[in-house]
Image (cartoon, rainbow, N blue to C red; front, side, top):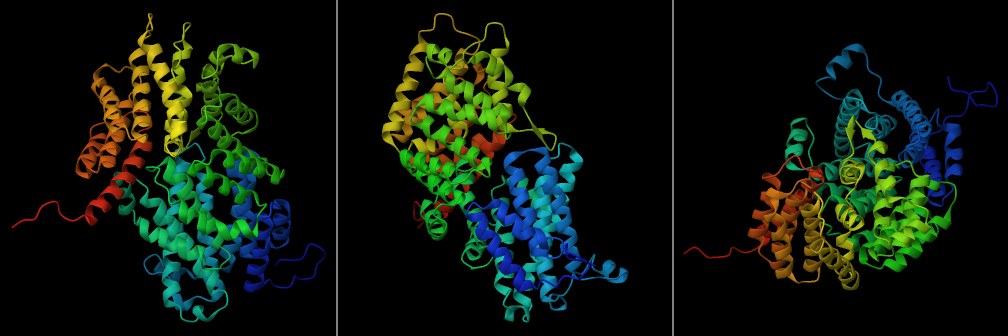
Length: 571
């Protein structure tokens, strides 16, 4: 039996309502940057209350995900295992015969008590978090374990969804709003994330019993965000992550900033100095092209708290890009250097990024900083991580680009910081500002001239020219100079058979050419070209990232085409 830490006396029970209220208080502390106080509030009851156990482990998971520190990972995994045991204690007990029958028939919603229903929900959430951490294990066994946990979590969320509608007794309880909010968050997150997957992967997931309906996912998350439940903020943060990051990096870059601002507004008012709120205010400003205001807010976010340095690292990453968009390479270098020194997330990418930014500066300035660009590029390959036994695509891309520096006479990368800007879809942000776009176009035209007049071209010469043409075409398209942009894209595509190293260039250029046709209003041609990029090329760098972007764009164009009136009338 559970006992208080002060003696042998049995501790009074923590009922469901009291647990939810106390966890809500811990969440407020967390959002006010009082991370240690939040943990301290949850700790005394984490061995007895499912909500305290889940809240405590969730904070440790967030910390582990930010640090990548093995000690933090182990602490989070241990807390998750303990939380699963606590949740299991509150789940409906079954005998051997009932357990066997439940392989085919799950519990009737009416047969579960209020506490047992919440235990199912909490168990599914903790299981999902444990799956996420398990994926960081480098073995195929870890990958399989993670997959099984996700499947189990998904099935429990679906069963909880049935309970929302079918358990009439539950609907009378005061805790029902928290249960419904949790179900909306779980079902919404699963549907939204699965809807992002390219069709070939999604078909396999559907075969395994998963389904991914984006509109349903967004609808459920919106319901969860507005539910006034303990998990409302989690649904809100999931939607913000979708709008402000996933749609940019894995989508077309078309972002619903209006909804993002509306979702964030009540929390920004309630927690004006909260690091998470300041961070997202800054991110929204950056995506709008309000670069200076974004920089101010990221710096305010850094100043707001010192307890979790990892939030500073997120701001360093954003500030590095914000200054890169302005081509303020000296300031961008400062934040890339801080990431190399402080963050464990992806040293390979950070070092490549730092070297690439230095490559944009005059050589005498690089020497004053005491840096050696060639040595930095040579470090990149050895710093790569693996997840589930596989290389991270951006690290693989960086290592391949840095490969040319391994020879005794390395050939210089042409505009590496701008190329990485494209990899992270930063040109969609730059495109909001004609002045920034024109400045980058000037830099690209200068690089184009230097390559043209290079009297001693390297083996990488044509590939470098095509990188410049792709990026130049992007700038021209964003400035509305579509004919000139098309010329640039066609130069890359016509060089396909002669490219030696950068095999990603042609399929990515085909995709950008498709977007150009979309901009002209020729949806049929746009779909044809983008489908060609999807079907006619394989085994190139960043292939999965392009497939995510293609999936997002084709979905949006097919939806638009379906709403359009037919182009001709059949008599």
